Image 1 (cartoon, rainbow, N blue to C red):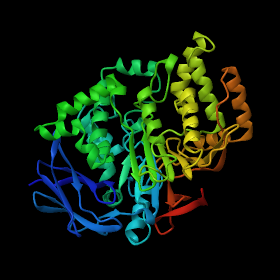
Image 2 (cartoon, one colour):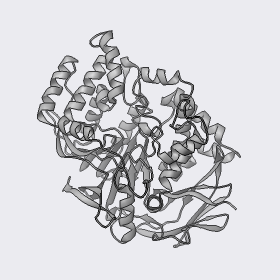
Image 3 (cartoon, rainbow, N blue to C red):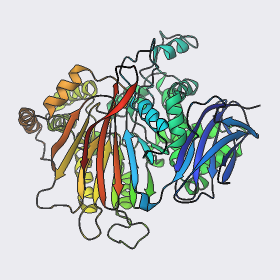
Image 4 (cartoon, rainbow, N blue to C red):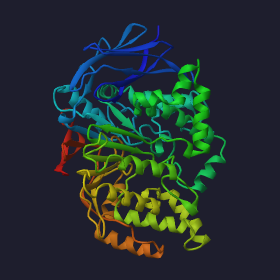
Length: 550
């Protein structure tokens, strides 16, 4: 009889339907039964010897929260009989309830050694404990995980020991992840954490990858990619990373209608083993990134979320380098402008959330250095500087939006257009992580002032180390002397001034943390909380800032 290996994860949820993701130990029929009588079933599909199901649940009632159970071939497997957590629920909030959107990135899931966590309390664990302790208290309506859900290039001691039992770690890629089976180990380590497992079973989640989901500096440059493709291990690593991302993260990002129209999802479900179909898809995504779209849209009442792929959709040729390929950029523009300005349209929205793992607005010194580096690598100061610039780019991770100047300006122009004029949303928020600190930055445009309140909201890490060098570097990067230094560096690169200016209005804050946006009507409130250890050995989330955005 099949058992439950991983999950359940409550992924998509709207006013009438939801999807629940599970991994099982064998082929079976997975069923979700809700206390209000709604239910759904799905037959598992097989990838690389593993069995999964994404169960659609229909017939839900808007404005309710119903408990649910999971059955495999009729046998109850969730909740466990000895569970210390409240029942998992599927909640379907209405527009009148408002939206609570929690977000963060960079969760290194290594278990504590000897009961002591080397990088401090996990913010997701701590959030889960708070929600479980008081289920009636306001909880997030959706959790956005903005990249680095797993670390394929920085494994725990336990995983390193497991890898050593499979293969010779003296051969590349050493103690990093090599194939699909090893990726499954990372997800088990992360999502079998009891607190996180329960939280993901009861709070819907949206996810997008960043570099560590595959490898640090993923798609930094064309030269970097050529070097990686010359190794004998990169192809398997990349295909396995994309395959596992599709199974463990991307499937749950999609609505039931999108799933029904997805030919790959149909193919893996219609064959006894979907591995070849998924591997061919991943190979196509590698050889022709523009043929695959990882970005997606979710509408939560009058809040629109656009989760943007800022890793795989890049154009890396130095003479036409962009963060998004033309098709991806056109898609983003279409999704932002659909329904904007028409308050009576079903597609109108009051709040626009742009999720991109990499911040759009950075500390000024960092921005100027990245723009300068892009100019150097592009040959602005000749071939010698181009070679030096590539070495600096890889060593210092200079590959955010600022390192793609035309894309940086284009995003700014699109945000200003979306936020200006009759019917403009109340807020436009760019949600990001990656840089291992949190901050709020607000842009302004010369000669134009959007009607919407626009903010860069950055929150990371959820659970990771923040070395002193990073703290000192980013604190200095936001300072006035650093800004002056950055202008001098930009002049050396003959960099055009960015089309937008910005100022930091909050932070920098360092620690394991999570941000929450509360959106009600046309109002927006931001709260940042950090996980802290109490003297009695417990952990708690402590509010660092709580402010109105609109």
